[in-house]
Image (cartoon, rainbow, N blue to C red; front, side, top):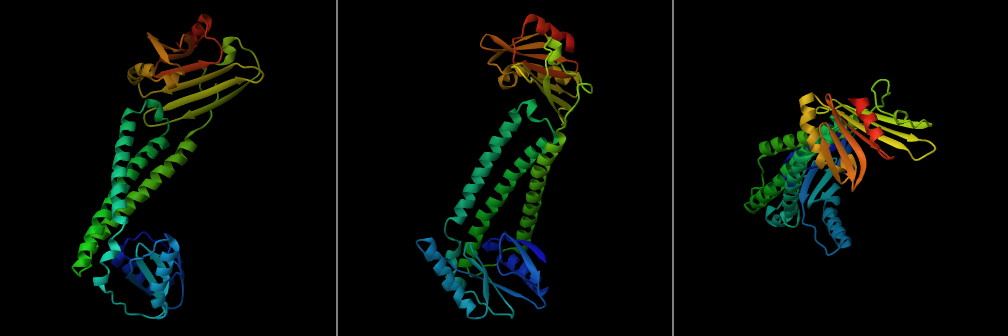
Length: 353
């Protein structure tokens, strides 16, 4: 059994014929050519042929009827249609058949929306790439908590580049193919097409590896930690001695060697304590990043903030809702559900500083 990816376009028909003939001579056959096709081994050679036909009809039923009428001519010759998309038909048979394409009648096979859809996809992918690149350049440091998410971002950039590359080639090569058909010389430069396919295939494979591999790594990267392994302030430090549930997460990344997240909740009550600690590569990097939090209201859960020395106080209107501290190589965010009194703030400062 062989696996084949059917992503050939009409202007690549000679590459497709080369691929199918090689498989056919090895005795590999399929009754239907899909995007992902499994070809079964038979004990006789299989012959493949390609022809083109501009499908017409005002609705799906009429277009299917027109396809069937065109394919019927080949069925009568003992050839089985296995593919009929983009005006390209592929047939298979047990004996070699001679097909002579009348290219004078095929100039319309490249007409329609396909070429312009490719151009539209090119512009959309370029705009999307520009917007995503702008997002990455302005993304806050907390967007890169794991190695995997960084790989995903790289994969998304490569995805847009790959789509732009492939879409532009579709647009350009379809136009070239049209002019070659008009000149009765529909032979595209096979070496160039092969190089383009190699570049596209490698980029597509790498994109998939980066995105899906990054998502897997991001999941595996997350692990819990014990307060004895890494000290965090807890509700008991605020003299709240009740039965609680503690959930913890830890991540590692290129830019943030360690990120620690914890949520402690009272089982029978409303008190809860959320902590997020970022450990940077150096004390200088932490000091450089700390003032950025003033503009990150989604991080400190408020709508304004004040910085005093190495502490940022986050407010929602006039209510103090969070405290952010700079200590050593770390920035720690503390958000309780209870009121942050002066004594509680002193408790936090003493614990971390």
